[in-house]
Image (cartoon, rainbow, N blue to C red; front, side, top):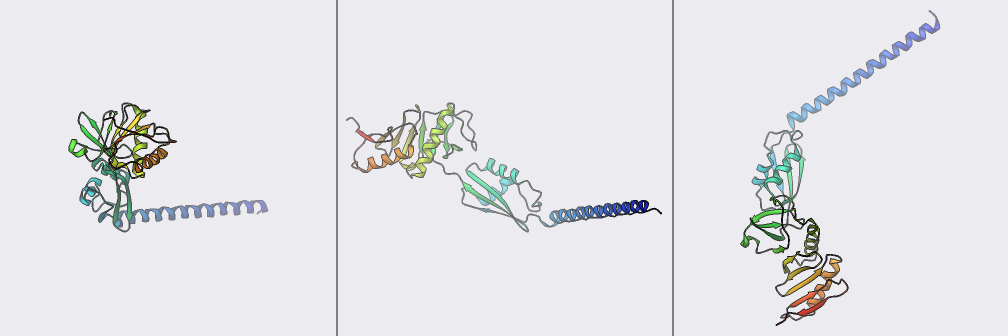
Length: 256
């Protein structure tokens, strides 16, 4: 046999051995994956569902809304679908995180929205949070504890969804006011937010003052000036505080 023929035969043998080795490796990988999948299907099943976080909803209500039931496979259930179902049934929830706690527990971690204001409509009063999410529809008594937002109209309002305003340019100023007031801990003092004119926004404040904001530009600075101005006034004084100029604050008593 010639040297070239021997080399060709040896080369073919090496290729067959390599092919066999690759096949065996792939087969082992497939078998391992199948075994892992079988183990996940057989062993990792939901036994308990727990809820972590404070909420107006009971644990049973949240678990029922999730649709998760004992015996479901932990890795096969659709967490995103379960979270969507909870949001649909529990509109006061702001954030939901779902975690697998092996070997058999699903944990639902919740954060609740904070209601801060009310918007009147023909159907009643919609309670909203600082992101303008519609939390519930209530009556005048239910809305009385929150500041009233006037000068806005809602389009097709739906509890659990973010508000759509007929004049969309009013949404961002409202969110800015609500968030800034919450951060500065003055939301309880604001009785009304008048957004009829977004360049001449006014607040009814502490049942004593009308606060002229102008726009929401430099709102943090305007809030600081408001606090300084009120601190320098007597407890019985009532009037108009103009902070539309972010460099100063002016007070005018109400006309008798």
